[in-house]
Image: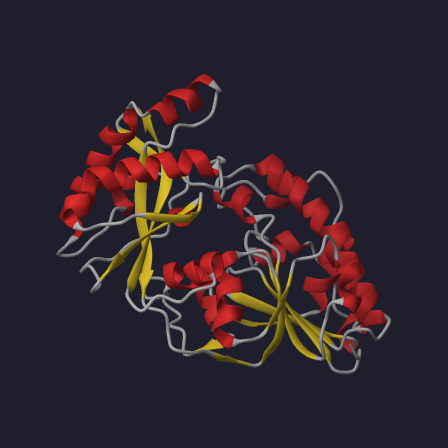
Length: 347
């Protein structure tokens, strides 16, 4: 790694916090001088507002619309190391909670699922729907897949975009959507008294009582990118790196470990430790995560820039803006340092 040639694009979904009316700075339990300085000194430019579109901007020819982004095909590649020629759909296990007159969705970010339990639920599904020729597969207990010869005529929403909300406004739409609404209701009944869920409830865990279709698509033959290496544990970005044939390393615990991991050129780093808390409105967890981000990533990144170990930093909070910072930018003392929460909300 040469400091004169090394650049980082840091993607941090959830950085700008949950969508709440209260001022975000009142939710924080500690100061964030490094994060405030990074965002205050940076140049702000428009950027995508979803994770799929943010990542797609680095890889061609991936579509930047969430509805057309082949999440299932890419995470299947990451989970199995194999590409699939057919249309793949994620059909993930979820928990639906009855809340007065609605059902609220909680995805696998909110519960764990052991491989044996996933296997038992998948076997029940396949036995019941085997006559349709369907074969549900779960190479990872939290990521389930169905393959189709052609794409269903429907539009879906990622469970992460629904988290904790009434599912009615997010159910599949389109000509084939009614069949999937029926299927989802059937699976609720199929899984309701399943021994796996009976054991989960006894242990105080959320029952896996339905499925959620989303992320369908066909894997592109190839992808091109200017990224030299990705650092991530996220299966979507792992799949993109495999498709593009570029190097990947596990995400380190802090930016202080980056000098031994970065390559000359652009390094794409995905830190998703804030995403769940922001999505589900968990203020306490989000505040704690911000403190960890400040200590483990923001402060060390400033040191790397000041020590000429890093040429530039691009920060993507996945909310419609990009913050670009070079070594000289840190010395722009005439730019008033403002709380990052105010910058995130354009206050």
